[in-house]
Image 1: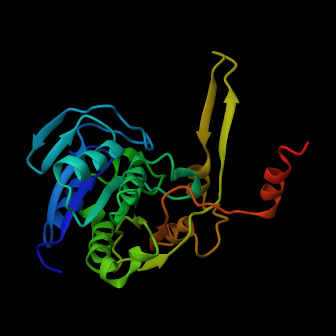
Image 2: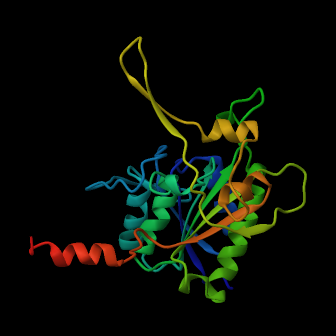
Length: 266
């Protein structure tokens, strides 16, 4: 791969985030990188779209007053339309499990690229919970994203020519934080089906609190996910790579066909 290879780099944590800078510096070593990223944190906005956005020039490219999906559309349609790949990340916090795919701004930026027929990757860092330091205060050094940057650059360099994107429309990549071990191996995975959202009444103020209990279970080591799932791979210290298609897949079956045929017969 030569310097002609071009990448639109976006994210949902904002253009000033450490994870974004980590990927920019890694990709800048071998590719023409244009940043088209949110000016501020846009985490967990899914594929929310805006009618118009303000664009500000930035030392790395462009800061967009909008969502990650906005950034992909604005980049591919107006700012850098001829890029070879869209990469979203590196997100501070893992995007693992089937239930998060539609929520994540990071993943949604990659999904948006798939509708343009542009190969894409979403890249996220698993920050282990627990300890005296809240997870939100961890992973503030570029070195913390080393495994994510290494895996993402390897895939960017090799996946297109290997034919990966002839089968997958985008890759969801999740990497562990370095802990002194050698480079983390890559495992090809499927999104976990584990789901543990709860909603409970707060008797004091009458509100209902929504809570994702998966992270508590991960902290306690209670991980029922089998081998081959993204969550199992990341907890075991491997880089999870899930090859995915843009939503939504269609599965036709006889039961629904029969209902359609009998609709006007009743």
